[in-house]
Image (tube, rainbow, N blue to C red):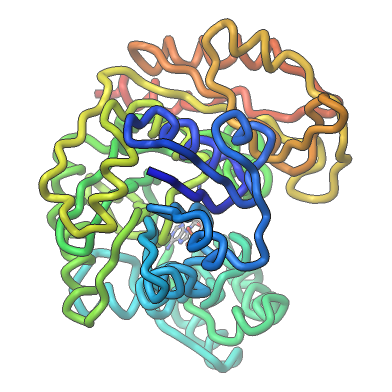
Length: 418
Ligand code: AMP
Ligand code: GLY
């Protein structure tokens, strides 16, 4: 099978790494890819993805990021008779519009925070004053992960309403929602629009610094499995959230195919939806896919073909920890083109290194993005995987490298509290 992978981050490197293990694969292209992905795929940058896929007789296009999904790439590919792993534009609204997602959950009784929608800032402010803080203010549309403000007091909440203007059209409508107090986890799931099969649950670390301090980022590390998703919570998530949302979409005439990401808050043992994403998580994927024993390409093909029910998906018994190495200054301005050393040494010791923001200049790998590398370690349990991951991280250097020292530390607390 010939595969074309769309995207260029750490998530896409993890997808390429796993797809490359498939016995079905004959050739992989990546558009635009990155220097890590180049180990498994020919990097290309066509102006017209659909035309390229037709010319190269691509059997499956795998789409990493949300923007091409929301913009209808899968619709265009299907129209041209090309199969894709990823959802169509109508389904991608689940991530592309918070209002669409919240109203769907409300209509079909899927547990989530209470909310109201506003297009008038004064009405939003009046509602906030009547509800009190803490409270959460969200831009409706895609805002590069920055459109959510968790306000601890009333002043911050009122200011947040005004800040929504900075997101342009994405912030012209806003959602004000109840603050949920609990522990977060991410469940990614494969679905063909009928059957939905959850992957091993993961936990992201969104804040920049140790102890969940500092600003929100794209994600500074992840691990799986997440002990907060006990068997009981997983069963509740499956019966009350995953299966119902796929059925709800179907009832609305929308067939969701691809990966559905449920961001959950576990409140007193009950999972509630924080958000849905229409794609794999980043960096959750870099911790989850290394635990997958089954053939990813076979599963993706079944999602596209609508026969996922026939797949039996197997997972490894162990644990995976992914530590993100970021450029000093991220998520604000940072230097680029700084040489990175130690990648090969860490790989020889067993590290799985995923490139996120790197470039290659004259054979030297250099930094080129905010999140530079994801360093994943696999071991029999979380504790051993943490130790291994930080040993690997110790091999890697670049100027101003920043990373969290406490990735997965919460898992140890959750385990010892049991
Ligand atoms: P989102 O982009 O919707 O995932 O929101 C970003 C982050 O804001 C989430 O990962 C949570 O940490 C936090 N958040 C969003 N909604 C809520 C909520 N209703 N209660 C508490 N925290 C929230
Ligand atoms: N790790 C958060 C996300 O992928 O949205």
